[in-house]
Each structure stands twice: as C-alpha cells, then as structure tokens.
Amino acid sequence: MPRYYQLKEIMREKIRSGEWKPGDLIPSERELGEQYGISRMTARQAITELVNEGLFYREQGKGTFVSRRKITQQLIHLTGFTEDMKARGQQPGTRVLSAEMRPADEAVAERLRIKPGLQIFRLHRLRLADGEPLAIEVSHISFIGCEKLLEEDLEHNSLYRLLETKYGLPLLEADQELEAGLIGSEEAQYLKVPVGSPALFTRRVTYTERNQPIEYASSVYCGNKYVFYTHMKREQ
Ligand code: GLP
Image 1 (cartoon, rainbow, N blue to C red):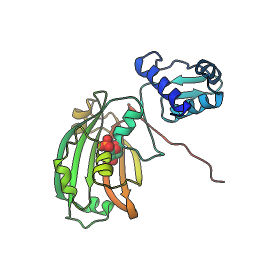
Image 2: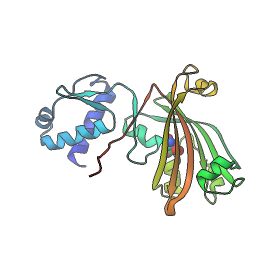
Image 3: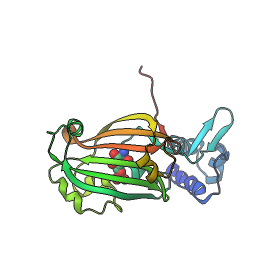
Image 4: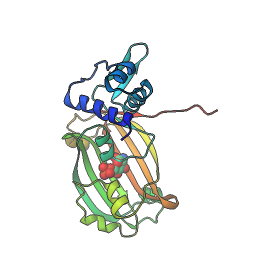
C-alpha cells in the first residue's frame, strides 16, 4: 500500500475513534512526516486527499482542521452512495421503500432515451449513514433484463456494485444537476426533519457503454447534512 494511503487510513481512524474531534487542528505536514518517517510531500498528499473528501478543511495561515460532521460528496468522480460513505469511514445503510417494474413515463423515458411505456425497474430507497437518515433516492433503471433486479437484496447490496460486477454493466459517466429546495411532508417523515427544512435535490443520469443511459435517479438530501464539493481548474 502506498505510504500516503497508509497515512490517510491512520488519520481516518483517528477521526473515527474520536481521538481527533471536529474543529481540532491536525499536526503539520512536517510533524506528521517526522512522526511516521515519511516525506512532507507524502504527508501533504494524504492531507490534501482528506481535504478533498471533506474530512479536513484548511484555513489560510492557521492550518488544517477536522471538519464538522457534514457529509461531503465530491462531484469529480462518479461514485455511489455506498462508496461515498465507506470512503468517509461511515456505515452505509439502505431501507428499500419500494422496488417494482413499471412503465416509464414521458419525463423518465426522455432521460433514459427509451420509448415511454417501456417497462423499467423503479427503486425507492432511504439512504442512511451510521443509522442516520440522509437521503431519499428514486432510481429508474433500464437495460435488457432489468427485471432480474426484483430478485436482488437491495437492502444489503450496493446498486452500482451489482450493476458492475453481477450484470457486467460498467458505469462510465454521469450528468448531474443540483437544486436547492425544501423538504416535503412525505420526505420529512423518512428523513426525520421538519417539513420545510432545507434540501438539496439532485438528478443524475448515469451512462454505460456507448453513451447508453442506464439509470435516472432523483434524490433528496437533507440540506443541513450535506456539502457538495468540486475542484475546478481555470481553462488555459
Ligand atoms: C448515488 C446516486 C444514485 C445511485 C446511488 C448508488 O447516491 N445519486 O443515483 O443510485 O449512488 O448507490 P449504491 O451503489 O450505494 O446503491
């Protein structure tokens, strides 16, 4: 395992165990380097990655601190909920609210580039982290044989993982929109927040080979628990 990765895991564990608490200043690159017998560059890489993942934040001239427990979802790599939670050292959880085959309506069909009325797999899930509800997601899935998903245990399996490993459908890219909004009454019950709390809505179309949409998902995230992170480069 590369050394920066080992250091990342060590620091993750310090957060997990509570040794480092939200708001704590973490040791400098030099101190970490000396403590673990690695170069400053290596320590910097580990810190930068945890900043990018949202576990740390930097303050100019002051140092790097442990983040408050908002969940940061990076918008750079295409990842699923389970992967995101595991990367943060949290236990992902799922409650399947419904799973069924149904005809695609106009809007869904357009996103999936299929004919309206075609049967698709619709999955309604509550997503949790360490037992705490975070988001509600409705996934519409379309591929030949998608009805086999009815037999899957989607409370204990990652949808992305199943699609990629069991069904041989690589997930290559996605388009995602983000919109601010308010939690409605049905969502409030599941997410255990008051109606009208801030919410972040996302809509994602995920593509498999040959630019073929495979999933159209709309999600509602608790606005007070989420941060979306993206790293931008100025075009030269
Ligand atoms: C994210 C996306 C969803 C996707 C899910 C897969 O939350 N917004 O579109 O369905 O990840 O997560 P998992 O692989 O944990 O089922």
